[in-house]
Length: 76
Image (cartoon, rainbow, N blue to C red; front, side, top):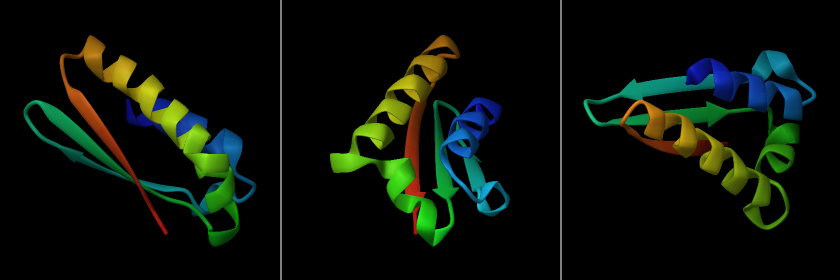
């Protein structure tokens, strides 16, 4: 799942080197903490949070296949 999220995030940003994804894995859930460059935060979140919501929807579908719940936090 982390590789899929990494691919999605890096395709959206200009500064791919600054993308950092921290995975906190539990028994039934996974939390991803996503950090990007200050200039790319708007591209990842999108207008009114639409892109962030779409990313969360995709990741929830991937997590459901594995029987887990997923949470994605975008950190400035």
